Image (tube, rainbow, N blue to C red; front, top):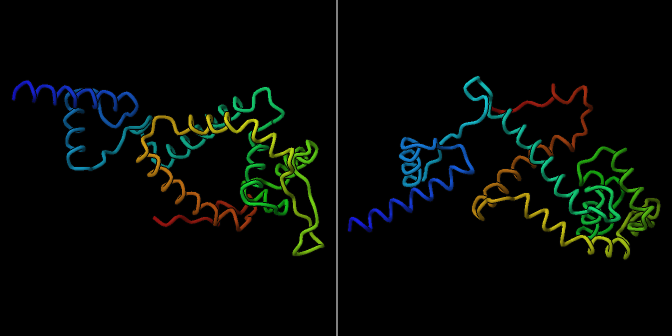
Amino acid sequence: MKYKLLKEIIGLVEEFDAETEVTDSFSDDSDGFKRWITAKETGTSVEPYWEGKENGRTPESVISTLLVHMNRFAKSYSKAAIWESDFSTQEEYIYLITLRSFGEMTKMELIRRNIHEKPAGMAIINRLIKQGWISQQSSESDRRSKVIYITENGRLALDQQMEKIRHATQIVSGNLTYSEKITLISLLDKLSRFHQVIYDKNISPDKLLEQINIAK
């Protein structure tokens, strides 16, 4: 029995050590190990440590910084995914994926789906048209308006890079477990829906902050 107990303890220590290598939620000592055991048994979460916490840095500041950093990390992987291809930016293949997934739409619909400002979005669309990857035609529902759609050349260009694009996407989610990924999706979706409502109001920058009130 003693040997069995020792093996179980060693297993728990190995699990604790692996977790503390990727998170600062628990100190790497006996006190941290006891707190980890308690949290594991009760299913409770322990508030993590973050840089500057002792100096009053807020959770909101940490979230904002981490989201910015994640965006930069993701862009670096996306850049690698299109290296030595005909794509110039991550946004180009995202626009093509959007058109292939959702079908033809107006230029502004495509731009707003990707949360871009009009000048930036139009520049991307013009590059894609120049490459022959998208084209435009009269809308079947309203002949006065134009819609854009992905061309066969656009599909081929996208297919040639999709393996690398998928690989880059997998790297972004890193070492999260499946359960952690599902939790993160739920949280990011909630956050995205909150910001989408604000984005859809198209508030000018000089009025944006003063018109947004967060319920506490």
